[in-house]
Length: 586
Image (cartoon, rainbow, N blue to C red; front, side):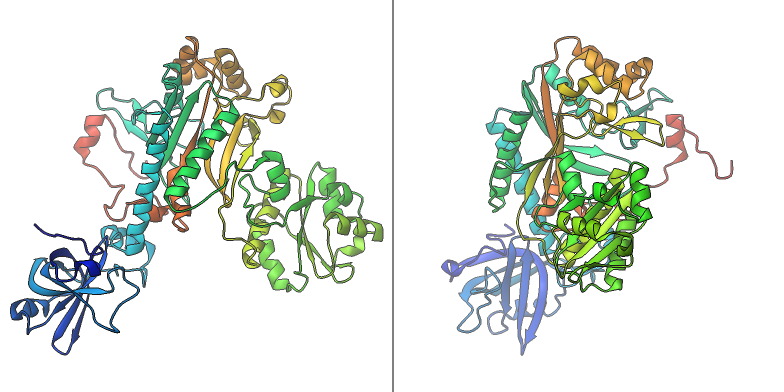
């Protein structure tokens, strides 16, 4: 056999035991004729001693070892000796005196380091991802990912869910991100789409009477990438029949508590809930980081009375003015404020007004306000001496809120206000629709199968932007980790929603006819949620990007540098599919 034990297993109870270990050369040290090798596998590291007085042949072979050679070592476990224990290693009290050494495979000098002391650039690491994954941190992260997936399966199995698979080759129904299209060889000129989510299929499972479904499934979206986005990602997909919103909360909170507990993290349920309008109004985000304060204040009713034209004109145009009290920050330099203004501008703000409280509010704009108006702003913001007030005004409510919300986050980091804790929260009652100026129509905030709140349904045709949905996101420390809704289960209501979205009846029939027909045969009330597994594991493992916990990720240009994909294909393959490429310039 190649090994009797792993490289992280041996302890003092195995002293004098004959063992066989296999792994990689992690390091080699020559101490006056005696050679020490650290042998590594994913379980840990064990020190091996090659003493020529014990075995000359093994010692001779050890002289030629280099980093990442693959070894098999046989020998006897012994104590390291007084004062030589390495408390940083789980195997640090013992070592193995080698009797035999076999080099199973020699390694060339690796192009990157395979430990966590010095990381290469991202592109280099991902080009040699099979080496990058040897790092202890990477292997520990993927062990956590495994535990999360196992815990999810165990929890849902215990609660009578069925793990059901859905197709990878499906119909293109573009209503969100761009689809990845797959040409059909058999039906030339026609295309499949890779699923952005199993949304329609899981609803069909409910129509089929499957009652409780879950799936850990790959999804695909052709969208611009960032730290928490990849073209292919993994969802924990869930759907339940005969449920209301509250049933979803209870089931999912139980799942999260179980998963976090399996990762050694204790959380308290139930999680707090905040309506979408309150989240935007107080935090400028629909995924608010609640680990610190700094709440926004809407001071539009005060600002409109001032002589400051920026505020007054904005409000006259139907806009809003929001204020943030950065406590004890009156000593900020102009450079500090300019950096915060840069953040606000990234999110659409035209600028960032400010006032410092030095016993009274002072800045270049206070001359446009009366003493009474300044006192009212001071009171509304709960400002005191030493505080810094920051303002964003914009004709669009969402810009005023979001831009100042991002300034809030920047301040939270700059002032070290963010607590080290796990802060889950539900954000509820999202708008059902929002107006897309580019498309000149209303679009779904979540997706077109989300149920409106019945008490708002009368507004659908007259004021669609005021209709709230039975939709909910689960957030964690400023990230959305899951989103879901109660679904529409009646054909008549679904047709009204399609009409509100500006989708003609014939187009709706072409895209979603099979779902509409299914609803005619007794679809039960149902709802569900989908977790971003990658994002959840990213947060649990303390990473800043989901790329670190996806085994073989794409870079910012959606390229796999290791496999060099996407790539050109042979002309014969294109002919077989009935596809001709247009040459540049034609």
